Image (cartoon, rainbow, N blue to C red):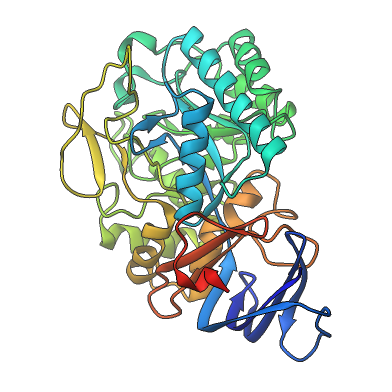
Length: 405
């Protein structure tokens, strides 16, 4: 039975439709547009959303874990538990992110993600879609490793990447689900050649954890570098005095070739510099990312080297080092809008259209349009707080009474 949603202002996200009608048939949008401009399917079930705001489901490029589960140590069941909880929080697609570990651990974790993805394909539940694996590390400059363990930091290896990609279902976003993105330091030996090889194989080269000088970053960008993780975090200045040369953060903030991830939890970036960053970078290449991490850190369970973290607030620390956030994108979006001064459409784009574009998936993700899967969020129109989310035409678990229609 078709479902028609009215009484809603829809953001596609860049187009605002004030009195919108959304028609969903078999989990797919058959119409997104003004109410009264489209004939209703016979027998369609109607739901009035009472003036709420509808927008595309959120797309998160950096999820390390959630609650009791860390992606580095989770099995397929744990990966899907994360995916279901993300859906409940409005994230309808994501990159499971594996951080620095041994080769064997990364291969095992990539295989678990692939197994979870295969189960998603078979069962089609209301959970966030796995888009591929994001590998953050282990190819980092040791002084800038942050919470990544020193003993597993190493030089880039194409052979190792191919082994991890095989476990994940192939190289690139088109895999099953595949190795979609690798974050590494532009200052490591061979970084530019590595970035070029990744780009040629459909993997997004991403920079982070670097104090590399301007020539290293420039070479990375010329070779196809396209993304920068967690702006302001683990971007050092070269030894050259600041007035003599550009720092990595200068590129992150200003270079048009890069899209940049921004964690709006108030711990990774304070409100004032966040606003300045968005103003300088522009909303078009700002990507809201959660850097969600399990409550215990990057690792949990047997063999994990992290212990329970009871630090209050929205961030998780390991031995005093910031290792991730507790907030999903739905918790960060109201803060981003408030701190940056962006209009609603632009703020929504940073969590929907923009991350999809980084992956080359903007035609299928991050927007509301006929023919696309019904993946969307219902928000309070004033605060942008999440009310409910739908994934492939199914309401996410524990949706509030609005879903009862």
